[in-house]
Image (cartoon, rainbow, N blue to C red; front, side):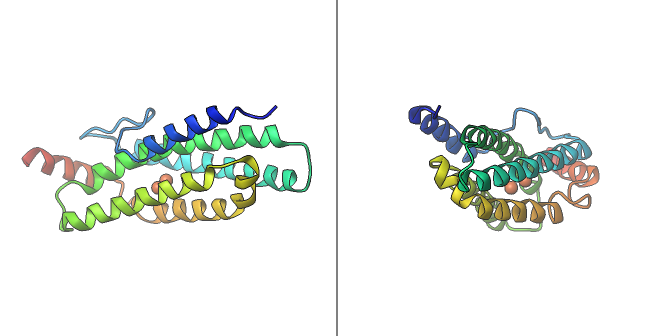
Length: 179
Ligand SMILES: [Fe+2]
Ligand SMILES: [Fe+2]
């Protein structure tokens, strides 16, 4: 049974609009005093969850491309990937905004540019995940590589223990209060 195209496009529209806003995620509240290790652990766990979804999706897509009748399983796996990627992107955007928009030696234009580029990458992933089952199945290998590289880069930078530490957040929160 194939999915109603109207449902699919409505869901896609909701995903795109959610991913393009700076909002707090449903599972990760970010306050001036957010706990760095909790935030970091949660975001890293979400990365692992997404890597698992990507592995499932690429395996199922390969089977579907070779003619196996696993279209519904692939649809469900892609829906899980989209939902969890949406939740992760919302939570992550809120954290990055909080971390980068404190007082900084970096100019605010540079920070805005970094945020803009990061969100543009998230939006590009939504584009790659949009479309019919066969369209997405045809490009899922490239998407998996690109999303994995995106997450690996985050783990080397703002998700490293040196960047996302309680000391850094405490210092920024204090400066926020002084501002
Ligand atoms: Fe990201
Ligand atoms: Fe991420």
